[in-house]
Length: 134
Length: 120
Image (cartoon, rainbow over all chains, first blue to last red):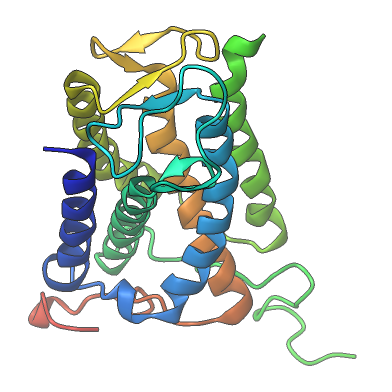
């Protein structure tokens, strides 16, 4: 199978695990999509380094775009690429991120270190201490 | 030193997210057992995918910007670390947003065993 086909399959399988196997339903929550938006920004940045400097190279036979050129960087945008990386990498990343978060939340619901919960940020008071002072 | 380029990117991701544990109290590293258990599934699945993609020729790695250390026959060490670093950064991001916004993620209530598999 090509990278394109595998990437689509990865996204579909991750969504199926989220909705029907772990039943975490993360993709129905803004608590997933807002962090995902932040992660994708940094993915484009860091993966742009990996692909723009040809640390990782791709064979055009298996992606929508062309092979990473021997000399110089691939296209920044267009030709099946976004920030130097094949668009397939966005799907690969989505599958990796969603699967990881699904397992994390699923384990929590199963009682594996469900608590202590995250927060509050250090600029807010802990719920347990000095709840109403000042 | 350019052999450390890929490792450097991974180190940047770890450092750029580590402050969330302190400033936003994400308590992800604090819950290290849950974190380690979480990593097993994505590491196994994506290492298999990566080994297949390398064997099939989907992608390759520049010997000048990677350490050249290989695990499981053909997998650059950096790729294995990638599948550890990215899930950690993702979970830190999830918990960071939860810390600030308080939006439900789905593990607020323990799963009731009498309705195991039910929705919560």
